[in-house]
Image 1 (spheres, rainbow, N blue to C red):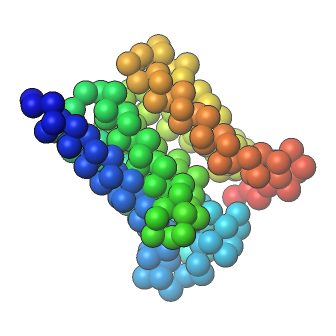
Image 2: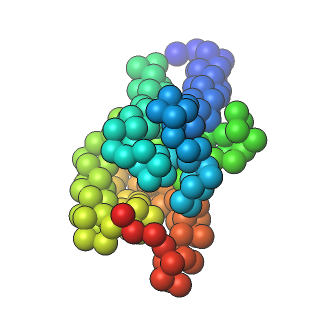
Image 3: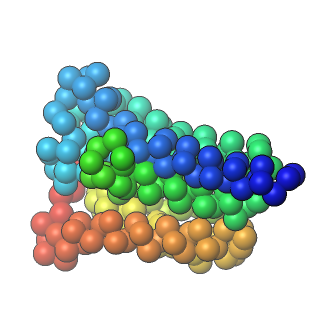
Length: 197
């Protein structure tokens, strides 16, 4: 592939991923179901967890699926374009960043867990499925979404190193940003004020 064409594809892929990530599906899904704005309830996070609090399992599942797809699609397109795994990881980070600091919502976004899930299923399916299993076990035992997310993503570097080592840098960075984004949840958890399901 011509170097200038490849550079153009990389830039466009990253821009598309950021724009895709910037669509906070929790907001339109809540409007469609006539639910409270997820940014105004619970933790104030525009994600599936607060949609569940406001309207139950079905709109939450729709939100989770759409937030995952907006991460998966740009990475899949980067794969289809023949871009390297490192560029695909960069595209994944752009999608997650878009969810966290979305251009369409005054840079006030969510935690990025569902979007990271979608990216991971394309880039590193074995690692991601194991992390999803960890999330489910912690959620089942503790009923605290933030704790499940931090433990699961925090395990990402070790698990990716074992099963898909080429994605270790990606999961290392995701672990850092996910923990940082959950810092207020972790403070509430330490104080015993984090809400359970």
